[in-house]
Image 1 (cartoon, rainbow, N blue to C red):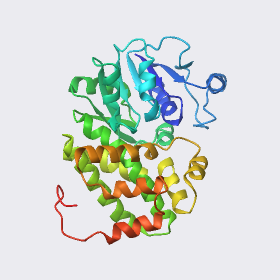
Image 2 (image 1 turned 120 degrees about the vertical axis):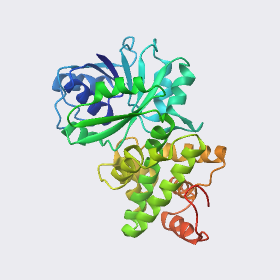
Image 3 (image 1 turned 60 degrees about the vertical axis):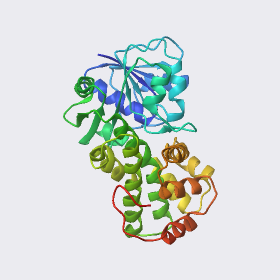
Image 4 (image 1 turned 90 degrees about the vertical axis):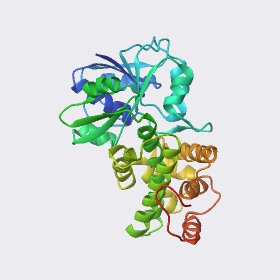
Amino acid sequence: MKIAVLGAGSWGTSLAILLARNGHDVHLFGRDEDDLAGMAARRENLHYLPGFAIPEGVSFERFGSEQVTGDIFVLAVPSGAVREVCSNLANADATFVIASKGLEAPTGFMLHQVVLDVWPNATVGVLSGPNLAIEIARGIPTVAVAAFDVISNAERVQSVFGCGTFRVSVGDDVIGVELAGALKNVLAIGAGMSDGLGFGDNTKGAFLSRGLLEMSRLGLAMGAKLETFLGPAGVGDLFATAASTLSRNYRLGRALGEGSSLGEALTSVGQVAEGVPTSEAATVLARRLQVQTPVFAAVESVILGRIEPRAAVAHLMERSVRMEHFLGGG
């Protein structure tokens, strides 16, 4: 099968390696011509994923160099680039698999909504889960969820991506799977802040449990299924991202907690941290849905420099304490 992977960062490269190992004809698209030429010559992405051989089944092409074609388009670009990339595609007859994890700022749109806004008749679904790029490249046992409105489309993606080290389950909760993958990045920044401030696991556990509650409320308000947030695409991805030093969002949050400015933290990470723009989009979404999300609002306030990390924690601790049901309360 011919597959176009759109985005040649660490995530796109790891997915290209996985798909080529599965025997597919993979075309990896990126923006930087020099990086692409280097990858083609060395069969390695020295910039974003050093140490892993890229199989011969992967070819390298620059966006705009020729018409992007394929049976499947895998979107692995930053969330802010999804609309532009889709707008420049000449043909949308293929199936879109959204592997990017974020929301479009400042609209608050989910990425499948962005794709459909550009290509209203496209077949669009999402692939998400506790999927750190370097571990996929290493062949470490990994689980993901493919979600499409029509299950047969999810099963097709399952057959393309699935192998002995990458187990793909299927479902139809596109909203829940995609939203969980996007919002956990914001919570991972907050978890990193907590560690950077020197707090313990009690603090981080409380923060993440409350964040999961708010994430679930947003999803339910949009028609998602509760069980999605309790499975690999929800709790699983949240745990992997918020507890791992491999996570760029966690590392950015830790740098903020240790006193770095946002600019300094972004420089230290060296790659896009999706939780930064998604924090803004999540606030827009929560306001639109009239869902209270104080944890997400606190993380956004720190990112925007409105409040110091330690003061944000104090503010959350000072909120009135009361018993609350999972689907209600504030």
